[in-house]
Length: 369
Image 1 (cartoon, rainbow, N blue to C red):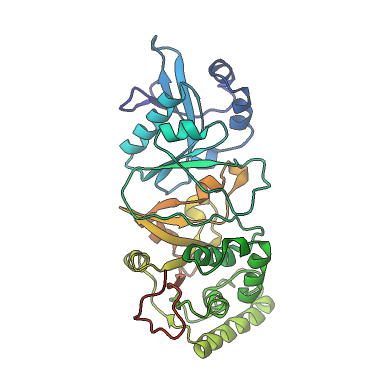
Image 2: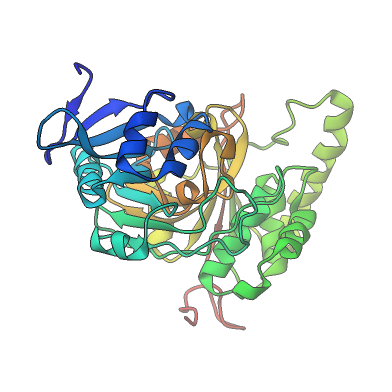
């Protein structure tokens, strides 16, 4: 196989070609794996097989299907079959060779014991149990770089337009300002209703809604555009009233003390904010990760060398993308910088949320943990 790439543990990496592996999968076991691998079009996420040849050098003793979102710094094991420890070791070696930050493992056939033995830690399952049969109930992660990354709760948005509200709720749950038991669909839609520009959430409206919902949390809006945003795809009659709502949001921001910084939030500033214990709601384009240029909110909450760790409340189930991909997702600094230029105007929007402060405390005083 001329297209094979050698890994340091005698593994080979080959493109995944649907429809050609039924015999292999039957021989290695897990008959249900064949259906899972072949019923979803994973081509958008660069599917590869990482395989371990048998002693005869001909047949494979183990294989793992791996995928990843584009312009990210991880690999995801969908399943490992045959000699599972050998397959997983080959994937980890392949990820190290590519200098990736992380390997994840979906819990379709992986047991907690197998995952722990291979150095993987369990991911907390989503707050709202997924109703998508194409998403696993469990997942695991192994970090390959040092860094300070704590795990927020994962919650998948229940509509196509509530990403802004969900990222804010995840940030506040992670900060301890929102009890996890209070984080549900009602909370999602309530905050969206306060922040929406119908149907999306633009940066100023989102910042104002967050400050109103949590008055003790310092909020700053970052927006390098002084006119209404995210309206270009509407007809003129539909733009006018939405633009008026955005102007009202700016007035509200001034009245309740939400500053609007007209400069784009750089990657250095994002890293600094996270280092101070702040969280960053970042407006990005999905063109890089998913292949279509749609504005979308994600939460930046952790860092490792060379990458920022985000929470994405949306996953492309039709491409085999699941909450395991979207949760604790490392994105290289240059990729995130490119993603943060949104729409035809290439503007930048973000909302930073500081630690909740004690009643009457100044911004220079530390918040209670």
